[in-house]
Length: 349
Image 1 (tube, helix red, strand yellow):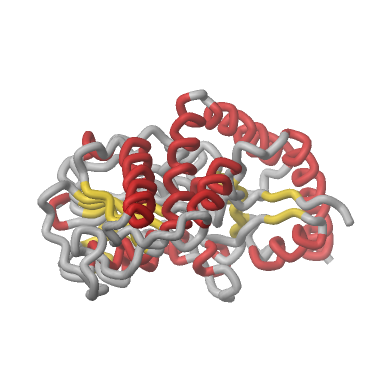
Image 2 (tube, rainbow, N blue to C red; image 1 turned 60 degrees about the horizontal axis):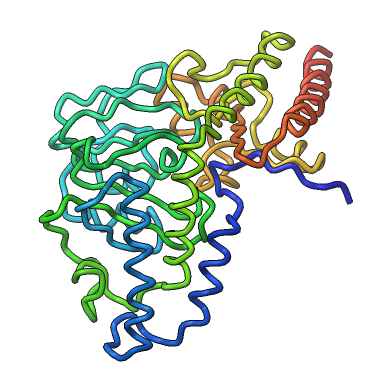
């Protein structure tokens, strides 16, 4: 069997070796972090080490890091008792709690006239478009930007931020809500009062340890310039497509985006069809957000940007990462353009 080529980092990143090691170490600990005996204190120390690692990587020293089951739960915890506005390009976890009435332009940029009553994502998972976060925004989904762009929670002025471990090479099923110290957060899961009384239940120490290690590794990687190299590779992919294919739109190509993300639209060539065709070639891509994959419907994000149903349903997302090679990108280009040419011949008949 041919080796697989993975170009879907925005859905989930491969588990980092550092995260795996930290998780195995956590599995060897017997104690409950809430216990006061020696075993419990060792577990608690590991928990707090991970909390510090996430805070440092986010530039959130002095803020409260509340561990959750992921960014979706973090959004629910932060937004359940809020009354905020957002745009239609936000993740479903945010639009479920906010009124989606903020304007979004054709490039995917959102106008936020009242930050102190609004939620705004830092970067979109489908298009990669990066927003300018206004001072005093109440809630910011940083799941996609964390680890890919320099972030300093303490400088943004945001009151609450949601992040996820598996987007940065940590384990699935763990995330965090990061809040300014003193922010009133009402627990949605009540019980033993863990996580400073804001999220009860024995902490997922194995997942949290992996999250902390992944956050520390991601921060070092970002500082080393790895994501600048990834952007060069992403631009190589887009330039190659632009040179040979004038019928494909590269969404929001001329605004600031995540360094690894390309959203491509070939109108009429269904995104889900392209995903299946590439999968048969042992290449993993996406037709949009992983949370909406498998659902035969147009991208809500692209429709909010003004694309019609047919165009919005013809999009694919390529999201590369630190392990992606130029050979892999070139192989994708060869397979994709071959399928693209066959599609055009079929349509011309």
